[in-house]
Length: 495
Image (cartoon, rainbow, N blue to C red; front, side, top):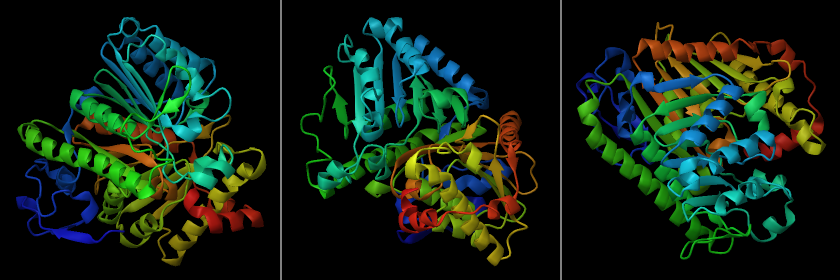
């Protein structure tokens, strides 16, 4: 982890409270944003203005989507009615009937067929190429009459090349590193989620989804996706892929050259967005009660903005505050574990998938041991909780709903003495080793003083936790196969 750097806030209410930020998340070093929350209950979050773009959004323009069917119906409808642009960034697109209907909705959008609508799709190369029928074959028809307004890109990690690329079979090669962002954009509406574009995520796999109507946020994500697309392979009409002329090839060119180039482009884009929004946001500070703040992570490229912000938020939680965390795959990093157990002073509850709600339940071969692996990691975490005597403050819950799997992720932050959350994180990160150290991720922080939005966020949290049981006895009663223990010991950072 990079060295922490001390900054003294110029905000009057925080002058006596030096805030320590990781050097990696403060692009302006000694410069602290002049923006600050005027509302007393939100002053604890003033530091966000220095480390991320902060977009003022009316609370009424934020919609909490509560289930996979509503997510699918909303996304399809938005793709059908978009008039200017559609941007889809996901791990992959499935190959079933619902996915075909989604592609058809785009293809038969009048503005797209008339060459008036721009379509950008960003997927992961390995996951999007798996099998004979795959994401590429599903999307190829969109290129037929697109008049160069359709761009389908597949991001390929620079860490999978040479003999590794030849020897590691499909599915397993996805362990190395992935494009994992989940951003779905139509015109000026953005849906931020952890859900992929496939049948399970449209039917019986519980995730989180927030729809935000705001042009500035939509522009940020449309341009971020475009930057990553410039680093990716481009799907051609004949089904082949190629890098754009002059682009660095992640499979053939020097690894360090690609990483340096990709890191510079993404970091520079983010830094410019922070700088521009600090200048533009001043006029909204007195009139806005809700802010949306994008965070990005690309551990494989050395970009760690999201993880540094998350760790600081966890570590700085004061007494009587309450943080609720959800993750489909429980594998907290050592830094997050330390922040929660040793530094956080508020209560903390964590919701994870019960083995019966894990997407790998019943999988053939070694993948079938994945639910046991996450149970083992949860056992190890709770052993640490008990060893430091924090079991009254930190609780574990397991989501289980008949016929459903759980993929929800994010957190809700309740200020001291408050019964409704003032902050939520939502997006693709799982708070685990993969999210922090390997994959390309994004999520947003939503900070609000609006009582209605707080209530809706709380209701979302309650809905998820209603299917969660706190059962430490059941967790420790599971017998973990020895081969799973060995695998986790060696390959934990791939989970």
